[in-house]
Amino acid sequence: MSAESAILPGYIAGTWDIDAAHSHVGFVARHLMVSKVRGSFTQIEGQIVTAENPLESSATATIQMDSLSTGNETRDHDVKGENFLDVANYPVMTFRSTGVRAEDDGYVADGELTIKGVTHPVELSVEVNGFGPDPYGGTRVGFSAIGAINRADFGITANLVLPTGGVMVSEKIELSIEIEAALKTS
Image (tube, rainbow, N blue to C red):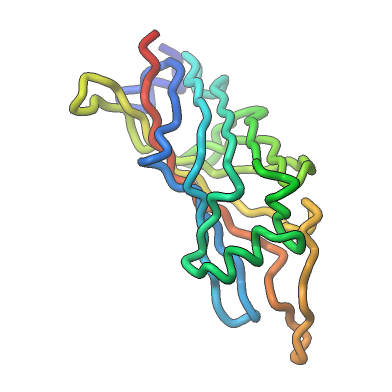
């Protein structure tokens, strides 16, 4: 066991499959400069590899863009359309970690996020929530992560300037991620 893994109680090295039913990939955007609209993607798949040294761990994820939900069907249709995510032409978003580093009391996962065929670096502040058994004889791990992106970096530039000088939708999009994953046994 490495010095890094010693500070994570119950740390288990292994390959983990993301459990979409118990995971959440969410986002927040400012709307009309006066409120925040929240949304999420419900179809996610991927793997996390926890290495003997946690700083050598990695993660990959694929998110089905058509699974977007903001709680409003009209808005969902608009965000999935050509002006924003263009889901018909870009059906998936992907994340691939490029490194993990210790920072303050937690970790940062550096990675590459691809949206609409455009890839940019992203930093996710990660909290390791724990490792433990599930009631079916398996083992689970949980992570929380937060970050932010500029949607214009990914070619999502549609906007409407308001009479007050603000915009309809903020360029900054906050990310909020909860991941539960199951240890692969074979």
